[in-house]
Amino acid sequence: MDSLITAAARALAAGDLLGVLKRVGLREDAHALALRGIAMAQLGDYDRAKDLLRRAARAFGARAPVPRARCIVAEAEIALVSRDLGWPPKALAAARATLERHGDRVNAAHACHLEARRLLLIGRLDEAERTLATLDSASFPPGLFPPALRAAYELAAAGIALRRVRAGAARRALDSAARSAHQSGIAALMAEVEGARALLEAPAARLITRGRERLARLEEVEAVLASGALVVDACRGLVGQHLAGSGGTEGAVSLARRPVLLALARALGESWPGDLSREALLKRAFRARQADESHRARLRVEIGRLRAAVGGLASVSATPQGFALEPCEAGEVVVLVPPVDERHAAVIALLADGEAWASSALALALGASARTVQRALEALAAAGKVQSFGRGRARRWTTAPLPGFTTTLLLPGPLPGD
Image (cartoon, rainbow, N blue to C red):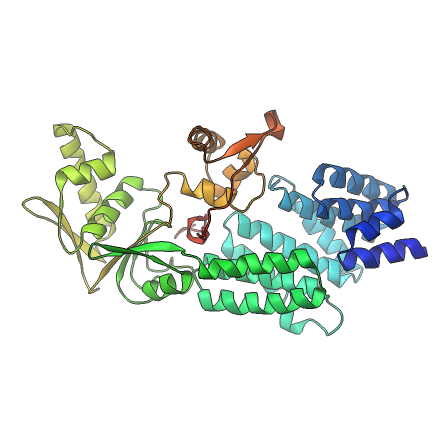
Protein backbone atom coordinates (compact mmCIF):
# COMPACT_ATOMS: atom_id res chain seq x y z
CA MET A 1 0.00 0.00 0.00
CA ASP A 2 1.53 3.34 -1.02
CA SER A 3 2.12 6.34 1.21
CA LEU A 4 -0.86 8.36 -0.09
CA ILE A 5 -3.29 5.56 0.77
CA THR A 6 -1.72 5.21 4.24
CA ALA A 7 -1.95 8.97 4.83
CA ALA A 8 -5.56 9.04 3.62
CA ALA A 9 -6.48 6.15 5.95
CA ARG A 10 -4.93 8.00 8.90
CA ALA A 11 -6.80 11.16 7.95
CA LEU A 12 -10.06 9.19 7.80
CA ALA A 13 -9.42 7.70 11.24
CA ALA A 14 -8.87 11.21 12.60
CA GLY A 15 -12.05 12.54 11.00
CA ASP A 16 -10.19 14.72 8.45
CA LEU A 17 -12.48 14.06 5.48
CA LEU A 18 -11.12 16.81 3.27
CA GLY A 19 -7.65 15.43 3.89
CA VAL A 20 -8.83 12.08 2.53
CA LEU A 21 -10.25 13.61 -0.65
CA LYS A 22 -7.15 15.76 -1.14
CA ARG A 23 -4.97 12.66 -1.20
CA VAL A 24 -7.08 10.15 -3.18
CA GLY A 25 -9.84 12.24 -4.78
CA LEU A 26 -8.65 11.56 -8.34
CA ARG A 27 -7.55 7.96 -8.00
CA GLU A 28 -9.56 4.97 -9.25
CA ASP A 29 -7.80 2.02 -7.62
CA ALA A 30 -9.70 -0.15 -5.14
CA HIS A 31 -8.23 1.27 -1.93
CA ALA A 32 -8.76 4.85 -3.08
CA LEU A 33 -12.35 4.13 -4.09
CA ALA A 34 -13.06 2.62 -0.67
CA LEU A 35 -11.55 5.56 1.22
CA ARG A 36 -13.39 8.07 -0.98
CA GLY A 37 -16.63 6.19 -0.45
CA ILE A 38 -16.32 6.30 3.35
CA ALA A 39 -15.39 9.99 3.24
CA MET A 40 -18.36 10.84 1.00
CA ALA A 41 -20.65 8.93 3.34
CA GLN A 42 -19.47 10.98 6.31
CA LEU A 43 -20.02 14.13 4.26
CA GLY A 44 -23.63 13.06 3.68
CA ASP A 45 -23.54 12.10 0.00
CA TYR A 46 -24.87 8.58 0.53
CA ASP A 47 -25.70 7.75 -3.10
CA ARG A 48 -22.20 8.65 -4.28
CA ALA A 49 -20.70 6.80 -1.32
CA LYS A 50 -22.60 3.58 -2.06
CA ASP A 51 -21.54 3.70 -5.69
CA LEU A 52 -17.87 4.17 -4.76
CA LEU A 53 -17.94 1.36 -2.19
CA ARG A 54 -19.60 -1.08 -4.59
CA ARG A 55 -16.99 -0.27 -7.22
CA ALA A 56 -14.26 -0.80 -4.63
CA ALA A 57 -15.72 -4.17 -3.58
CA ARG A 58 -15.80 -5.32 -7.20
CA ALA A 59 -12.24 -4.10 -7.72
CA PHE A 60 -10.98 -6.03 -4.69
CA GLY A 61 -12.80 -9.20 -5.77
CA ALA A 62 -12.56 -12.63 -4.21
CA ARG A 63 -8.77 -12.50 -4.00
CA ALA A 64 -8.91 -9.72 -1.39
CA PRO A 65 -11.62 -10.90 1.02
CA VAL A 66 -10.71 -8.60 3.91
CA PRO A 67 -10.81 -5.28 2.01
CA ARG A 68 -13.96 -6.45 0.24
CA ALA A 69 -15.57 -7.27 3.60
CA ARG A 70 -14.62 -3.82 4.89
CA CYS A 71 -16.42 -2.26 1.94
CA ILE A 72 -19.54 -4.29 2.76
CA VAL A 73 -19.40 -3.13 6.38
CA ALA A 74 -19.07 0.48 5.22
CA GLU A 75 -22.05 0.05 2.88
CA ALA A 76 -24.06 -1.45 5.77
CA GLU A 77 -23.28 1.61 7.87
CA ILE A 78 -24.51 3.88 5.08
CA ALA A 79 -27.69 1.81 4.81
CA LEU A 80 -28.24 2.17 8.56
CA VAL A 81 -27.67 5.93 8.58
CA SER A 82 -29.88 6.45 5.53
CA ARG A 83 -32.52 4.20 7.15
CA ASP A 84 -32.42 1.59 4.41
CA LEU A 85 -33.55 -1.13 6.79
CA GLY A 86 -34.23 -3.50 3.91
CA TRP A 87 -30.50 -3.81 3.27
CA PRO A 88 -29.67 -7.53 3.70
CA PRO A 89 -28.32 -8.14 7.23
CA LYS A 90 -26.92 -11.52 6.14
CA ALA A 91 -24.33 -9.70 4.00
CA LEU A 92 -23.12 -7.84 7.09
CA ALA A 93 -23.00 -11.06 9.12
CA ALA A 94 -20.96 -12.74 6.38
CA ALA A 95 -18.57 -9.78 6.21
CA ARG A 96 -18.16 -9.84 9.98
CA ALA A 97 -17.34 -13.57 9.89
CA THR A 98 -14.74 -12.96 7.18
CA LEU A 99 -13.09 -10.20 9.20
CA GLU A 100 -13.01 -12.32 12.35
CA ARG A 101 -11.58 -15.26 10.42
CA HIS A 102 -8.73 -13.12 9.11
CA GLY A 103 -7.97 -11.45 12.45
CA ASP A 104 -9.34 -7.96 11.70
CA ARG A 105 -10.89 -7.56 15.14
CA VAL A 106 -11.46 -3.80 14.91
CA ASN A 107 -13.62 -3.89 11.81
CA ALA A 108 -15.33 -7.09 12.96
CA ALA A 109 -16.26 -5.26 16.16
CA HIS A 110 -17.58 -2.36 14.10
CA ALA A 111 -19.74 -4.76 12.09
CA CYS A 112 -21.09 -6.22 15.34
CA HIS A 113 -21.91 -2.72 16.56
CA LEU A 114 -23.82 -2.00 13.34
CA GLU A 115 -25.83 -5.22 13.77
CA ALA A 116 -26.77 -4.15 17.30
CA ARG A 117 -27.77 -0.65 16.18
CA ARG A 118 -30.05 -2.01 13.46
CA LEU A 119 -31.73 -4.38 15.90
CA LEU A 120 -32.15 -1.53 18.37
CA LEU A 121 -33.71 0.65 15.70
CA ILE A 122 -36.41 -1.90 14.88
CA GLY A 123 -37.18 -2.57 18.55
CA ARG A 124 -35.52 -6.00 18.98
CA LEU A 125 -33.90 -5.07 22.27
CA ASP A 126 -33.08 -8.58 23.48
CA GLU A 127 -31.31 -9.46 20.23
CA ALA A 128 -29.47 -6.13 20.25
CA GLU A 129 -28.31 -6.73 23.81
CA ARG A 130 -27.09 -10.24 22.99
CA THR A 131 -25.23 -8.98 19.94
CA LEU A 132 -23.63 -6.15 21.87
CA ALA A 133 -22.68 -8.56 24.68
CA THR A 134 -20.13 -10.14 22.33
CA LEU A 135 -18.29 -6.82 22.51
CA ASP A 136 -17.35 -6.15 26.11
CA SER A 137 -15.63 -2.77 26.07
CA ALA A 138 -13.96 -3.53 29.40
CA SER A 139 -12.06 -6.43 27.79
CA PHE A 140 -10.74 -4.46 24.83
CA PRO A 141 -6.95 -4.77 24.89
CA PRO A 142 -5.40 -1.31 25.51
CA GLY A 143 -4.37 0.35 22.27
CA LEU A 144 -6.10 -2.16 20.00
CA PHE A 145 -9.60 -0.73 19.80
CA PRO A 146 -9.75 2.96 18.90
CA PRO A 147 -11.64 5.39 21.14
CA ALA A 148 -14.21 6.00 18.39
CA LEU A 149 -15.24 2.34 18.48
CA ARG A 150 -15.47 2.41 22.28
CA ALA A 151 -17.72 5.46 22.03
CA ALA A 152 -19.92 3.71 19.46
CA TYR A 153 -20.22 0.67 21.73
CA GLU A 154 -21.25 2.81 24.70
CA LEU A 155 -23.75 4.76 22.59
CA ALA A 156 -25.44 1.53 21.55
CA ALA A 157 -25.46 0.32 25.17
CA ALA A 158 -26.97 3.65 26.25
CA GLY A 159 -29.63 3.34 23.56
CA ILE A 160 -30.69 -0.05 24.92
CA ALA A 161 -30.75 1.30 28.48
CA LEU A 162 -32.86 4.28 27.42
CA ARG A 163 -35.38 2.05 25.67
CA ARG A 164 -35.56 -0.18 28.75
CA VAL A 165 -36.06 2.90 30.99
CA ARG A 166 -32.81 2.38 32.91
CA ALA A 167 -31.67 5.94 33.43
CA GLY A 168 -28.70 5.10 35.66
CA ALA A 169 -27.22 2.59 33.22
CA ALA A 170 -27.81 4.99 30.34
CA ARG A 171 -26.04 7.83 32.17
CA ARG A 172 -23.01 5.66 32.97
CA ALA A 173 -22.76 4.47 29.36
CA LEU A 174 -23.03 8.02 28.02
CA ASP A 175 -20.40 9.31 30.44
CA SER A 176 -18.05 6.60 29.20
CA ALA A 177 -18.98 7.41 25.58
CA ALA A 178 -18.22 11.09 26.19
CA ARG A 179 -14.73 10.26 27.49
CA SER A 180 -14.00 8.00 24.51
CA ALA A 181 -15.38 10.52 22.01
CA HIS A 182 -13.19 13.23 23.51
CA GLN A 183 -10.15 10.96 23.18
CA SER A 184 -11.02 10.30 19.53
CA GLY A 185 -11.11 14.02 18.74
CA ILE A 186 -13.97 13.51 16.24
CA ALA A 187 -16.31 16.47 16.55
CA ALA A 188 -19.31 14.71 14.99
CA LEU A 189 -19.01 11.84 17.47
CA MET A 190 -18.76 14.22 20.41
CA ALA A 191 -21.87 16.03 19.18
CA GLU A 192 -23.76 12.74 18.88
CA VAL A 193 -22.89 11.84 22.47
CA GLU A 194 -23.97 15.25 23.75
CA GLY A 195 -27.24 14.94 21.87
CA ALA A 196 -27.88 11.57 23.51
CA ARG A 197 -27.02 12.97 26.95
CA ALA A 198 -29.57 15.74 26.47
CA LEU A 199 -32.31 13.09 26.31
CA LEU A 200 -31.75 12.29 29.97
CA GLU A 201 -32.52 15.86 30.97
CA ALA A 202 -35.53 16.36 28.69
CA PRO A 203 -39.10 15.38 29.65
CA ALA A 204 -39.71 11.77 28.71
CA ALA A 205 -43.39 11.48 29.60
CA ARG A 206 -46.33 13.03 31.43
CA LEU A 207 -47.38 11.52 34.75
CA ILE A 208 -51.04 11.76 35.75
CA THR A 209 -52.22 10.80 39.23
CA ARG A 210 -55.17 11.96 41.32
CA GLY A 211 -56.14 14.39 38.59
CA ARG A 212 -52.77 16.16 38.58
CA GLU A 213 -50.41 16.11 35.61
CA ARG A 214 -46.71 16.89 35.34
CA LEU A 215 -43.79 16.32 33.02
CA ALA A 216 -41.15 13.83 34.15
CA ARG A 217 -37.61 13.01 33.10
CA LEU A 218 -36.54 9.44 32.43
CA GLU A 219 -35.13 8.99 35.95
CA GLU A 220 -38.47 10.03 37.44
CA VAL A 221 -40.31 7.65 35.12
CA GLU A 222 -38.03 4.81 36.21
CA ALA A 223 -38.72 5.63 39.86
CA VAL A 224 -42.48 5.54 39.27
CA LEU A 225 -42.26 2.21 37.46
CA ALA A 226 -40.38 0.74 40.43
CA SER A 227 -42.57 2.35 43.11
CA GLY A 228 -45.16 -0.42 43.35
CA ALA A 229 -47.97 1.80 42.10
CA LEU A 230 -50.39 0.45 39.53
CA VAL A 231 -49.10 2.01 36.33
CA VAL A 232 -51.13 2.41 33.17
CA ASP A 233 -48.30 2.92 30.68
CA ALA A 234 -50.03 4.40 27.65
CA CYS A 235 -46.64 4.94 25.98
CA ARG A 236 -45.94 1.22 25.59
CA GLY A 237 -49.43 -0.19 26.15
CA LEU A 238 -48.71 -1.86 29.50
CA VAL A 239 -50.65 -2.13 32.77
CA GLY A 240 -48.94 -3.47 35.86
CA GLN A 241 -46.85 -3.00 38.99
CA HIS A 242 -43.07 -2.96 39.39
CA LEU A 243 -42.54 -2.35 35.67
CA ALA A 244 -38.94 -1.19 36.09
CA GLY A 245 -36.14 -3.67 35.44
CA SER A 246 -36.10 -5.88 32.37
CA GLY A 247 -37.74 -3.47 30.00
CA GLY A 248 -40.92 -3.13 32.00
CA THR A 249 -42.63 -6.16 30.48
CA GLU A 250 -42.35 -8.98 33.06
CA GLY A 251 -45.54 -9.43 35.03
CA ALA A 252 -47.31 -6.76 33.03
CA VAL A 253 -50.49 -6.97 31.02
CA SER A 254 -49.99 -5.81 27.46
CA LEU A 255 -52.81 -3.88 25.84
CA ALA A 256 -50.68 -2.52 22.99
CA ARG A 257 -52.63 -4.56 20.45
CA ARG A 258 -55.99 -3.86 22.09
CA PRO A 259 -56.38 -0.09 21.65
CA VAL A 260 -59.95 0.10 22.97
CA LEU A 261 -59.00 -1.60 26.24
CA LEU A 262 -55.92 0.63 26.54
CA ALA A 263 -58.06 3.73 26.02
CA LEU A 264 -60.50 2.55 28.70
CA ALA A 265 -57.70 1.73 31.16
CA ARG A 266 -56.09 5.10 30.56
CA ALA A 267 -59.37 7.00 31.02
CA LEU A 268 -60.22 5.15 34.22
CA GLY A 269 -56.66 5.60 35.52
CA GLU A 270 -56.77 9.34 34.90
CA SER A 271 -60.05 9.66 36.80
CA TRP A 272 -58.86 7.55 39.80
CA PRO A 273 -59.75 7.57 42.69
CA GLY A 274 -63.07 8.76 41.33
CA ASP A 275 -65.19 7.22 38.62
CA LEU A 276 -65.85 8.22 35.04
CA SER A 277 -69.23 8.50 33.40
CA ARG A 278 -70.34 6.16 30.66
CA GLU A 279 -70.69 9.07 28.24
CA ALA A 280 -67.10 10.13 28.84
CA LEU A 281 -65.87 6.57 28.38
CA LEU A 282 -67.77 6.26 25.10
CA LYS A 283 -66.10 9.42 23.80
CA ARG A 284 -62.64 8.32 24.91
CA ALA A 285 -62.80 4.71 23.73
CA PHE A 286 -65.05 4.88 20.66
CA ARG A 287 -64.97 8.60 19.80
CA ALA A 288 -68.74 8.51 19.75
CA ARG A 289 -70.22 11.99 19.47
CA GLN A 290 -73.78 10.82 20.03
CA ALA A 291 -73.94 7.51 21.85
CA ASP A 292 -76.80 5.13 21.16
CA GLU A 293 -77.76 1.79 22.65
CA SER A 294 -75.32 -0.11 20.43
CA HIS A 295 -72.43 1.96 21.80
CA ARG A 296 -73.55 1.29 25.37
CA ALA A 297 -73.79 -2.42 24.67
CA ARG A 298 -70.31 -2.43 23.20
CA LEU A 299 -69.01 -0.51 26.22
CA ARG A 300 -70.35 -3.21 28.53
CA VAL A 301 -68.61 -5.86 26.46
CA GLU A 302 -65.28 -4.02 26.41
CA ILE A 303 -65.45 -3.31 30.16
CA GLY A 304 -65.91 -7.05 30.69
CA ARG A 305 -62.85 -7.73 28.56
CA LEU A 306 -60.85 -5.14 30.50
CA ARG A 307 -61.86 -6.78 33.80
CA ALA A 308 -60.61 -10.12 32.50
CA ALA A 309 -57.35 -8.64 31.19
CA VAL A 310 -56.34 -6.80 34.38
CA GLY A 311 -58.07 -9.12 36.85
CA GLY A 312 -54.94 -9.90 38.87
CA LEU A 313 -53.99 -6.25 39.17
CA ALA A 314 -57.20 -4.27 39.53
CA SER A 315 -60.95 -4.49 39.35
CA VAL A 316 -63.33 -2.37 37.31
CA SER A 317 -66.48 -1.72 39.31
CA ALA A 318 -69.74 -0.15 38.16
CA THR A 319 -70.94 3.06 39.83
CA PRO A 320 -74.20 4.98 39.49
CA GLN A 321 -72.52 7.29 36.98
CA GLY A 322 -70.17 4.93 35.17
CA PHE A 323 -67.15 2.83 36.14
CA ALA A 324 -64.15 3.10 38.47
CA LEU A 325 -60.74 1.44 38.58
CA GLU A 326 -59.76 -0.12 41.92
CA PRO A 327 -56.23 -1.54 42.32
CA CYS A 328 -56.02 -4.86 44.14
CA GLU A 329 -52.75 -4.26 46.04
CA ALA A 330 -51.26 -0.94 44.93
CA GLY A 331 -52.11 2.14 46.93
CA GLU A 332 -51.70 4.49 43.98
CA VAL A 333 -52.62 4.59 40.31
CA VAL A 334 -50.32 6.45 37.92
CA VAL A 335 -50.96 7.00 34.23
CA LEU A 336 -47.93 7.42 32.01
CA VAL A 337 -48.61 9.20 28.71
CA PRO A 338 -46.33 10.56 25.96
CA PRO A 339 -45.01 14.11 26.35
CA VAL A 340 -46.74 14.92 23.07
CA ASP A 341 -50.16 13.32 22.83
CA GLU A 342 -50.31 12.53 19.13
CA ARG A 343 -52.25 9.74 17.44
CA HIS A 344 -49.27 8.83 15.27
CA ALA A 345 -46.69 9.45 17.99
CA ALA A 346 -44.59 6.38 17.15
CA VAL A 347 -44.10 7.56 13.56
CA ILE A 348 -43.08 11.01 14.76
CA ALA A 349 -40.71 9.45 17.31
CA LEU A 350 -38.81 7.63 14.58
CA LEU A 351 -38.75 10.62 12.24
CA ALA A 352 -37.56 12.90 15.04
CA ASP A 353 -34.02 11.48 14.80
CA GLY A 354 -33.48 13.89 11.90
CA GLU A 355 -32.84 11.20 9.29
CA ALA A 356 -34.83 10.68 6.09
CA TRP A 357 -36.96 7.54 6.26
CA ALA A 358 -38.67 5.49 3.58
CA SER A 359 -42.20 4.39 4.43
CA SER A 360 -41.08 0.74 4.06
CA ALA A 361 -38.36 1.29 6.69
CA LEU A 362 -40.87 2.88 9.04
CA ALA A 363 -43.20 -0.10 8.57
CA LEU A 364 -40.36 -2.50 9.39
CA ALA A 365 -39.33 -0.57 12.49
CA LEU A 366 -42.90 -0.25 13.76
CA GLY A 367 -43.98 -3.79 12.89
CA ALA A 368 -46.94 -2.38 10.97
CA SER A 369 -48.19 -2.78 7.41
CA ALA A 370 -46.88 -0.46 4.75
CA ARG A 371 -50.40 0.84 4.06
CA THR A 372 -50.97 1.67 7.75
CA VAL A 373 -47.75 3.66 7.87
CA GLN A 374 -48.56 5.38 4.57
CA ARG A 375 -51.94 6.51 5.91
CA ALA A 376 -50.27 7.85 9.05
CA LEU A 377 -47.71 9.76 6.98
CA GLU A 378 -50.40 11.24 4.78
CA ALA A 379 -52.36 12.39 7.83
CA LEU A 380 -49.25 13.93 9.40
CA ALA A 381 -48.31 15.61 6.11
CA ALA A 382 -51.79 17.10 5.83
CA ALA A 383 -51.34 18.52 9.34
CA GLY A 384 -47.95 19.97 8.38
CA LYS A 385 -46.04 17.79 10.85
CA VAL A 386 -43.93 15.86 8.33
CA GLN A 387 -42.69 16.47 4.83
CA SER A 388 -41.45 14.31 1.99
CA PHE A 389 -39.11 14.60 -0.95
CA GLY A 390 -38.48 12.39 -3.95
CA ARG A 391 -40.88 10.15 -5.84
CA GLY A 392 -41.73 6.48 -5.96
CA ARG A 393 -39.24 4.18 -4.26
CA ALA A 394 -36.90 7.13 -3.66
CA ARG A 395 -39.47 9.04 -1.59
CA ARG A 396 -38.28 9.90 1.91
CA TRP A 397 -40.01 11.43 4.93
CA THR A 398 -38.56 13.80 7.50
CA THR A 399 -39.63 16.03 10.33
CA ALA A 400 -37.93 18.47 12.64
CA PRO A 401 -37.00 17.06 16.07
CA LEU A 402 -39.51 17.82 18.81
CA PRO A 403 -37.97 20.71 20.78
CA GLY A 404 -37.35 19.95 24.43
CA PHE A 405 -38.75 16.42 24.46
CA THR A 406 -37.28 12.96 24.29
CA THR A 407 -39.27 10.36 22.39
CA THR A 408 -37.64 7.30 23.98
CA LEU A 409 -40.89 5.86 25.31
CA LEU A 410 -42.65 6.28 21.97
CA LEU A 411 -40.27 4.03 20.11
CA PRO A 412 -41.25 0.45 19.29
CA GLY A 413 -40.11 -2.30 21.60
CA PRO A 414 -40.83 -5.93 22.44
CA LEU A 415 -44.20 -6.90 23.86
CA PRO A 416 -44.85 -9.68 26.40
CA GLY A 417 -44.97 -12.96 24.56
CA ASP A 418 -43.08 -11.71 21.48
